[in-house]
Length: 283
Image (cartoon, rainbow, N blue to C red):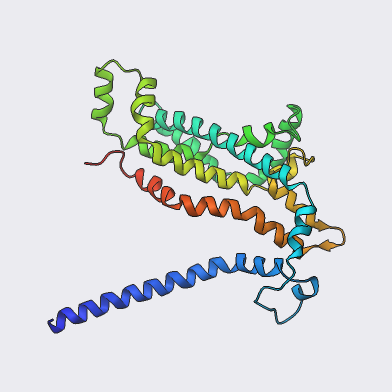
């Protein structure tokens, strides 16, 4: 092997090693908080506050049974699954229709409508909590499933992602469907929607995870465990006498594992869906 080629190969391997090492360090950095939660879930109360801290898990496995008995977790899980599932279904419908209208349909003021949709991202959600609370109170939706589903039934992220996807559709495909006598809804149902499946999966997973992790909104808008989701159920471990860190950590572990498993199995779909917006068709 020539000396120049050997040096180039060594530099390539060196770059790959540095990139792999950096990725490993970043992975450890992001994984450490969850590892620390696991360590705390197996610790005693005194061990939690000791310094220097012990980074190895303890033997207090009964924290999990105690945490499970501390709240109606089955009900919280069912509530969360229902709320997340209904929200995902509603978001997929609204994102599909709005994204198709903004990406395929040609009408005056389309870019202005898109700008208005995207401008919603510039408004902090926290500043709208009080007026939203008043509106839901007038509708008699406080402490109901409606309050946790309908206000989140449209996603700017979903609309924009599908708009980008549909905007990349070849115009010849749309014109061919029109020549065959297909209406816009027929084109959407038979051609555009099947092609957009990767983007729809990405939106569904994103909304499902966001709904599962939602805390502030349901915490303010609901007051009964009968309709509250998991994240609000975790507030059971916060009290006037302090926080039960060991019980809270155990509850965080068994309430976070389902969504982590979903994410691990679906991360490839997320990447495929994001890349699909760069071009609707290949070849």
